[in-house]
Image (cartoon, rainbow, N blue to C red; front, top):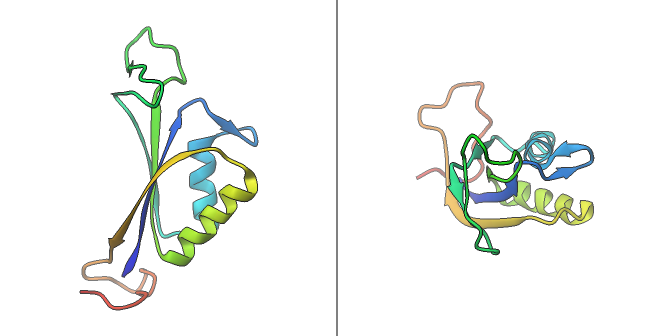
Amino acid sequence: MQGSLFRFYVHEGHRHQGKVVWEWLLEQGNRLGIRGGSAFKAMAGFGRHHTLHEARFFELAGSLTVEVEFIATEAEARQLLDLLHREKVRLFYAYTPVQFGVINPDSADPPAVGADP
């Protein structure tokens, strides 16, 4: 299947509608029918302000980055981007076209969209 890999980078304490953004994003992706999404907490990193943040005992909570990613069909990706625009959520993201599928699918897997390799 052809689709998109979206990676959103958010601060772990960033909130939208009373929830942390990484959790809100996963809930919205699930609600939209995206086949899967994951959130990963960074060990260290820096962003556009070039301030290095590291996971240390004395580090203030909420300053590390969480990466939220979805692999979605083009229609699912468009729905997610439209939602983010409507909600006015300001996020940095990376988008990569991908080909994806399930090896040896069973009856519980969603039907393939398009042709597998």
